[in-house]
Length: 517
View 1: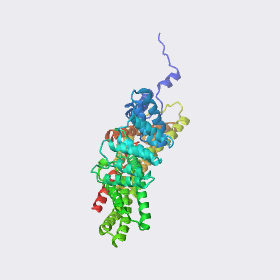
View 2: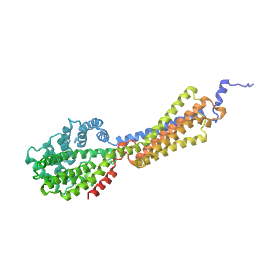
View 3: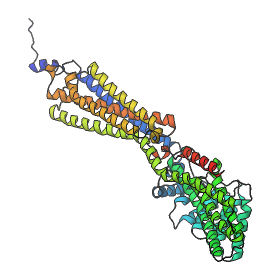
View 4: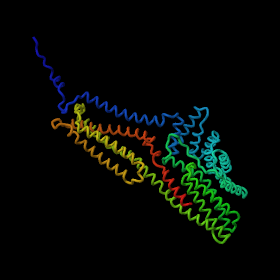
């Protein structure tokens, strides 16, 4: 005789689906989907971060990695890194690399710089750029005799270059204590002017994997040009001061040919900027023009004293030089503002990323707290997303990707486009605000009226913001990888991306050259 067995009420209740699962759904499957989504987001972010770390650091041994890193840092931060690179290189390599020591010497503390350069020069005495840089530091320290030796040795190294000989003349003149030494310096200056060799400045120490079109490399190049021009400025000051004193006293003597030599030096400095091989920067052109103007002013006075009238050719040259100096100085004054404007363009995608991350993170955090207060057991998380909801979520993520791509395209045109990049940020912020505010309506879209409650609404709200935030993280990660693949540098390396105004500088130099013809 069989009898019916009635299951316990608790079993019946357990077998029934939750009344809040208005659209149907499996809680176990929903939990797996959430975990899979989180795993995918984490995997993509970690993969992007790992690839960036490997690409920047994993491809090189430790000294080279430290050297490469230090090249893009301020001096205070780079010193400790380069000291570590030198120490590791000394212990690991049978033959020590001079470039790490030279890079450290260029940024070393004031009381250690000469000893570092001496160490680098001992390791690589055949390097002309190293000898020039070492000589300039000795000159700036007032050690003119030692500086002259370094410049003289640099002039004997390849390639053939008149810059070391000009610097040697400057060191000889600065260290002269009697007329014979000064005359020797003037003779060396005149002989160097007659040389057909090119005038080339040393290039900054750099890594082959880093681009040379950014503002940081341009800054390093200008720093070297300024350092090399410092002895020449002192030579010019000595000449002008001595000539002015003698001319005021009515003693013109041999000053006209000496001033003509200074004028020729200025012409060669200005002409060097037109050659990419010279590695000269606009400050060299400015120095060259100023040297010529100072020399011409005194040569006019000498001509007035000797012949009763200034030389017409000198007056014509002076007019051309003054005309050429105007656009040059205008560009130099405007340089930093233009670089800053370009920097805002390259920071544009990060402004968009930051505003989006803050807004979505705040919305998710609030929805997270709300679910903690209303549904601790997460029984209301299996409601499927409606098709319209999936379209809204997907469209938000895709629109964000399109905005990032558009911002990346506009980066290089920020100077020309003016306020357009800012308008893009404001437009995206408005759209983002709509998506964030739209999340408050998402439970109404996803749930039937009979299934809505605080718990189910909070759960749907949290899932909405969680999906948007996860999609945002994936898009940023993929955008970083795509950017690096397309441009060869990561979008966070702004120092290497923001323009150094190289093309604009060439245009100004061309204009200056035309004015001087």
